[in-house]
Length: 173
Image (cartoon, rainbow, N blue to C red; front, side, top):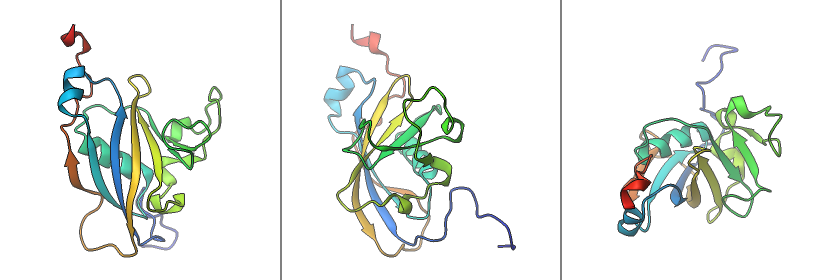
């Protein structure tokens, strides 16, 4: 890399660990029929410690077959998803939101997974689409000291079908 050049967005060389994260949908606008057929919807994703929360978001977005981007944030260090005391990591445009109840801890673009202080067994939250409110719990299933060859992030396990991003809730009436 040329002197003074910045690494590609979302890539930070200082952490060579591999994180295995289980992403579980805990609530969202799903029909009762879908939820009954898919009581658990989760994706297990491996991601390098040097990759950003923004990259994790894109991995989740693809793994759950979502179609349209929306606002999102991660909550880390609390008692799980929806904890108002957790550290919030947000999109760059939300960093200086004068209407927010609390100021975020950081930006998803510039926060590598490895900088979050996560340990195996920890859980943190991911909130996608602030209108439809898709809530996820992310469980740290493992942390390896070395990353094997290959492209990351990658999905290594899928449980349940991906719910439609926009459920037809009138369909059940």
